[in-house]
Image 1 (tube, rainbow, N blue to C red):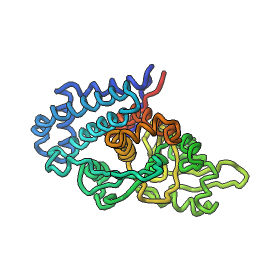
Image 2 (cartoon, one colour):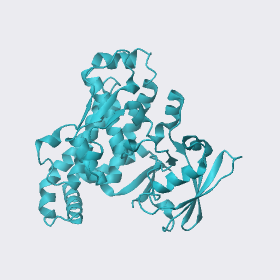
Image 3 (cartoon, rainbow, N blue to C red):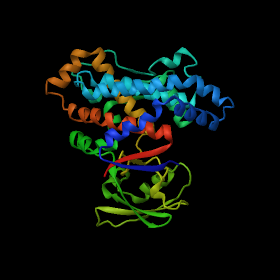
Image 4 (cartoon, rainbow, N blue to C red):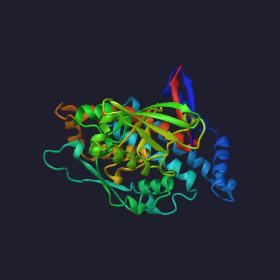
Length: 351
């Protein structure tokens, strides 16, 4: 499990990017790659690291330049720049897990498609993407989850569905679409191995107001040990209490120690809980962000007129949340990549 690495600083955004300077040094990058390759079982880790160090460094440097350019650019082109930055970050992660990347030309595709012809009365939040069998995205999915590509191959996702899965957009999503899909929860350590969770009662509307039904899904959603959660319910309260009992001491120092598909964290470490209505939506957040940005990036590249009408005509209500997502991605996506590269959860906090 990943440890939480809290870094106190004056400017979290700048400090996050400063952390990437580690990968601008060839000796430190070479040693980093060698350690990773040897850890995952390659006997020739030194040779592989020597071969891949320049490629890895340039993936990171180009990603940084795309993100920097996006931060200074107009929204007319911002999604495309961020998307290509995301691509390079993902290629860097893939290279740490698959040193022969790219081993065949099929993995150089995007691995995802969107509608070529947009419908009449186009609504951005109803636009959808479809995952392909081959390409960057399905390869990335198999490497970071150890799951088969068949689980996601052919799946379609509407932009609205994907936006609903991002905890930082929770309030904006609720305000825009008049529905809640993610709920903040509040934790308190009550013993060295037990955590009290305060959960909004309104989540039970997804379970016919049946707390036993909720409890069963919560326990069934644990990736390892089952039956870790017990509930203390009071009909009169806005929140109800859930007790987590695990085998970890001081679990609040470990990122997402619950190891539960219903419980997620935002960039600041705040916990949220989500009902699982559709297992198709159980995706790594890096992948969710990538799919949303692909949709927006391809729209602004190939449907320039439509994209311009959406962002400048003042008639699209979707721009409220899309603009927030773009600004969030500039800060969050590189942070999520750092978490993967160092196998820690970095939380950059203001002093």
